[in-house]
Each structure stands twice: as C-alpha cells, then as structure tokens.
Figure 1: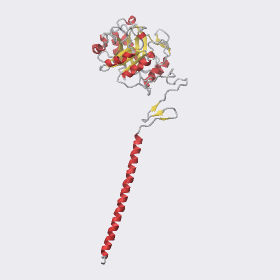
Figure 2 (figure 1 turned 135 degrees about the vertical axis):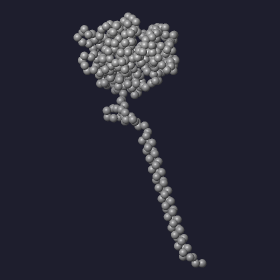
Figure 3 (figure 1 turned 45 degrees about the horizontal axis):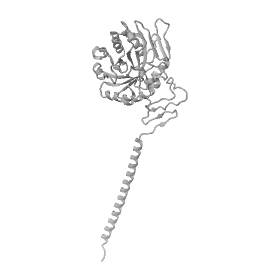
Figure 4 (figure 1 turned 90 degrees about the vertical axis):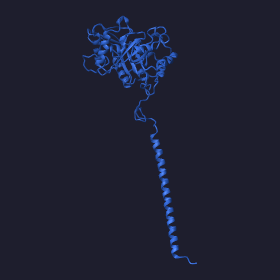
Length: 388
C-alpha cells in the first residue's frame, strides 16, 4: 500500500517540532540550574560577610573590632609610664577586658587617698581596673572658720593649701593628679572631691556655707584661665561632684546646720549638673538629709555601716529605716579592713553575698562604697561581681 506524501511530510514536521521542544526544555532546565548555583553561592557569600570579624591589628599596636572602634592593647611592661597616665603600674589586675567601667545597675564607689599615708598606686590605676563607677578624692579637710583658706591632702603624696595671708598657694603633686583625673573621666569614671573626713580642721560658721559653695564652684566646677581663680587641678579640670563627709565632731560640732544647707543649695544652683552626695553614719537621724524635709538637693546618701556599733550588718542593720529617712538613692558604705571599722563593723567577705542579697531588690538601693581603694584586692572584686 502506497503512503500518502502529504502524510509523510506532516509526520516529518511533527518530529522536527518535538526535537525543538526538547531542546528548548533542556536549555530551560540548564538555565534554572545555573541560576540556582549562583543563588547558593551568593547566599554563602552574604553569610560570610555578616559573620563577626576577628580584630585586625594595625601597625601602631591597636586593633579594630567588627564595629570599627579602636581597641587598645594591654600595657606592655617596658619600664616607662603611659604618657597619659602618671605612675602607671607595671602589672594591673584588670578585671574588665575592655579596661573601662562596667555598666551595671548598681554603682561601686571608692575613696582614694583617704586613709593611706603613702598612696602606693596612682589614681589612674584604679580607674583602669574597670570596677569603679565613681572615685571620691579624700579629703579637703581644712576650710571655713570665716576665712577663705582651705587645704587638701591625699596621703603624703599630694597636698594643696591656700592661705590668703600667704604669698601664694602651696601645691605638691596636683599636676600629676590632674592628668589622672582627665584619664579617669575619659574612661567614664566620675571623680568627686570629698570634703571633711575624720581628721583635719574644718568648720562652717555664719556665712561660710554660701562662700564655701562659691569657692568650690570656681575652683572645681568651671573652667577658668584667670590667674585670680584658684584652680588646684588646673584651669581645664572640672570635677563631677562633691561628697560631704563631715566626720570630725571636734571640728564641726553640730554637723547639720543652716550653713551646711546653704552650702548644698548654693552649689547646686551655681552648678546644677554637679553631683551632691552625703556620707553619714548608719545611726544618723539628721532630718536635713531627707530631701523632702529641707529641700536639700542631695543626689544620694552614703550610709556607712562601719562607723557605729548600733547598726551593724549583723546587729541592728537599719537599711529599711533609711528608706523612710531619705527618698532618693542609698549607697551602703563598707570598710575594706577591720582597722577602719568599729569592732564588729567590718563585713567579712563570706558575708557579702547575704548583705547584697538582702538589699538588692529594694528600689532605693543604688550600690556600695569602699574605703579605701588602696586596700581593695579580692574584697573589691567580690563586691563588684555581686553588684553585677
């Protein structure tokens, strides 16, 4: 039987169309495969780009983190001091690798120069530990008595005295401390001057409160290049606050008088950003400390647990009473050695967890102060770890 030529031509056309479709389908599948490979490789590259980068060390010894910030390397023990820090120690027990103050819900305040006859470590050393949020310089322990004279002593290493009847102020070591103050403040550590203290000769007589506030403001809380302005730490140094620590009954007698109120109110009006704290024995019932009773602008009180044996942690602990006496933040003051405390006033390291736990949930509890940072060591590390 003969095949129809038209039928043969139609079959051949169909075969050609089927081959074309198959080729097109293969090309399409190959394209999809190529696109998929490219997409997978792109995703892997993106993930690699977003992974945290290890720090790259530059030629000057600093390293750059993933965010581009500069990370300073640890100090190398080469026998020379950091030009920014006076008397920097060779080895520093730094507990915070960033070498800056730890952010914490609670403050850790230290007193520097307050008790040591010879300060074995400079101020900058303790700021570099990364533990302290504030350091109080102690003490300005000569002032008042209806005179413009004043004196500051930090152990035996630094002394500043001004007597208006003398040719000029006596200054020893304050230029070095000024450099350390700037170093500390750059690290986020607040530096305050503690006035009063357990020794010295200070009193506030009629009119002394306001004049003392004006002296403190011009000398410590404003920049001034005028030679007529006394600037113990130099023209550019501005401190962060004042700690009132009137602990010498032989000097002050009745500690909280109208002159004390005038000092605080006047200084706050002259420098609203200045921090004002008051250190008081735990047994104190001074009503003027309560901000609502006398409108005294106190930012926080430092309740000292080591000055009176009637309200020790193990016997008569009265933190809750203080929450009723004062409406603001409350710091608990601890001594770092038994020598600084009344008998039974030293809180042993083993008891520190119970102390912090007993107050940590109280809204007014704001932290701990330590006297003196020279004696810190493991005790200070324990307190810092408990405060978080």
